[in-house]
Length: 236
Image (cartoon, rainbow, N blue to C red):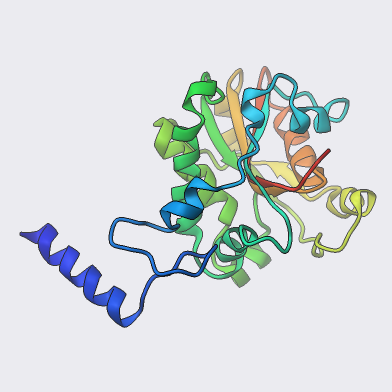
């Protein structure tokens, strides 16, 4: 009975304020959660997880030792699927990111990419940016993966100083911009010695942020680091 009432209320809300797919802007039906079936089926997957020494892994070679790396789908600035990232990051829809990250775990199950991961952590936000935005979208993604894998999310890193936006910077400028930004949360990091940690961010463009964070994680004795981003710019 309770489920029926919730369904009725949900349907009534959809009539007054229709939920729409962020990609195609078409109304979602009752069974569609955040994206419509068509756009979800056409998601431009990277499939990096199926390729040995894939493009993303090559991107970090010589910069920081990692176990493996993948991104769920490709990001292009003016493409319709870019709206997913914009909504998650800027339009107060981090729950969509959590849902999509958990879905990625299921979609990648056959690749065994997530096998052996002991804990999940996220690229942190500085407290000033966190206060302005109200949430860390990368934490929502990381928690979605942790939920799907039934493993802990650990707040292993902290942002110790703010940095200016990376949007219009080149690779070298981005790297210089983040130097000294991150540190280990010593109390929580100590419990991860010898563990395989999955570091999560929303998107990879130049990889400078992930590199800086992975370098910090590698300071934990015996730790192994893998990388996951929801989206990736074309890295070729």
